[in-house]
Image (cartoon, rainbow, N blue to C red; front, side, top):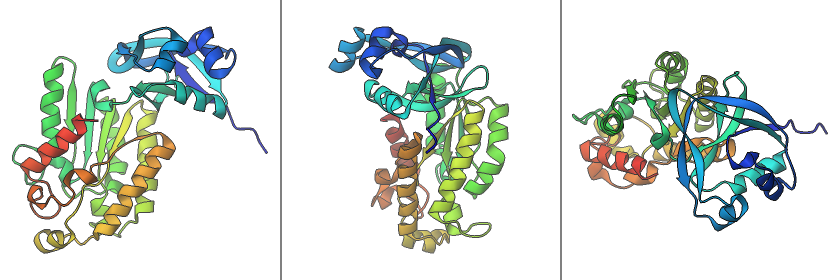
Length: 306
């Protein structure tokens, strides 16, 4: 059996310290100097007693996106077992996600668990739900934009690129180039319902959509962006067919939701489960498919609460 290739982990904090490596990995792990571009550091208070005991520090450093900035650190080559131990050591404020180092090397890094709080330049791609159809205020994306820009108008940007009727297939074909040109560091992906319904072509299965989503996320990650996949919302199957003419079974949409959640856990990617937010709340959905203004407000609050 061929041994597994080492996993490259970028660190700029306590995992480079000898005492922490002894406690987490059982001994020293050599590192190579590296730099992570497009990021800055923030202080993260630590309350986990185990992490406090190992590191001796009540405040660790975390990452946020910052165009033009960079963070110096080191790359550790870890076995799968060592990587699992590093996962156990890190607190809930961090998650392990893919990053692209300054020299182009792909690596893992522990980044903020809340991708929106750490983002600077956000891209939104998807279909009519992400576009905000039926909401004169522009939907959840417009609400997110107002909040995001108010936090730091000088540096923050949000690019709303969703199109009514778009399929995930079309998003995957066109979005990476557009988002790279706009230098988006975080990309919210909301699409798939049209593929399941066969809009504009053949119907896709949930399994096929996950394969397409995987390819799209890989392309975005190659540019240094962090993809954040928004799972499908609950659909009123009968109203959707009667009032909007969209023929898709609720069970198929639910299967897509389950497939995305399983894929996100397996591949260490962000998947936001929006299904329960509007489940059985028909008063928040105008035509069985599209949230109304109140529904979009509820979706935005659910994203904020992550």
